[in-house]
Length: 205
Length: 254
Image (cartoon, rainbow over all chains, first blue to last red; front, side):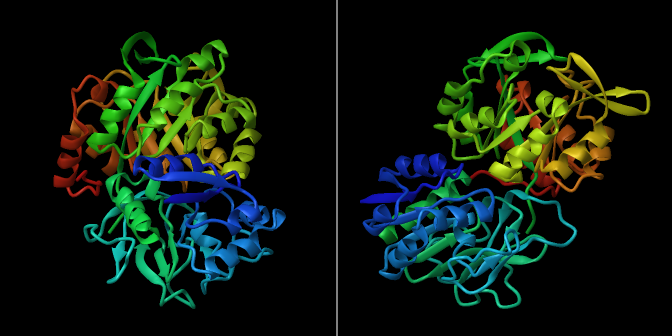
């Protein structure tokens, strides 16, 4: 099996690539709509500014091919910003539109908390998460973000498979059919993170 | 459920080998960065910092090969720095496998660098390293590996850095560094209570109690140490078990 990584210049692409390669799978980097049209499994790593990713998707005409690939059932894993772009829009770049594949908006984490939300935090898994299968309850994962999809107020109730609480409860894992997304960084989350990636590979195989 | 306090081993390198100074001088060789990285990754370190302390000194190019080799060993975040002066320097370090970059001297000389970096990589990837030395009732910012004194007050500089887009402050007490007499609780608390970004305390660690103190009294979000881990004076696993017994949230390795 070959896993395609969408390369739009994200800083964490090499670490995601290394983490997948450690699990013994072949990876390739793709950056064009033609490339996206041919993938059999797709990972969108992402870190940094929401606007940078959306502009990259629009600038290179990737938006439509990405939506089409997900629509035809290609197993998809979005990491961090790769989760956020699946939703409708983001407070981080209010003028831009997300991919609008999942319902809800990305908002800045609020409350009396330090930002970014940076470090190892526990998630509360709901029953039936395929990505979190075989992982202890309340595992620690590595987060590095200031924005997230809040669970309250029109959040993706049906798709949420795990939540995390930091300045309010937000979506840590979302799953819908062939779509998988995590707000944390599995590639940086030690053994638990490796298990998440293994689970995705098993689903994608 | 709560955010775990992080334990971060630091590899101070001369570009290739790990060295560690006492009060920033008298450097001695402590080992191979790749072997140490592998060990810390397995022992449950929450993150790893690799600094090229020679780059700032001799204005050498940064140590990209070391970063690549270290990153290959890690399933935890990697922060790298030392001699980063421009956006291009930072890009090279990130491309080599670092998740975050630290800036120190160059940010003091040109604070806009912080905004440039956070604009490109996001603030979660920008760590402002501050070397602070007590001067009467406050702390003064030192640069160039601790050899050059500035007019900056460390607390105000941390606030300014966070405003400019630094996502984290790596705060080293030059008074405590290498002394193993405990972290500087008052310095760390002064800064941690003023800024709304995480603070990593550094300098002076020896006993597990020092870590408990800096988390509880110093309000540190993370604590960094070097020689006690390199020399196997303190294992990360037993340190975390100690902290967990004190009800301090830590991520225990499996």
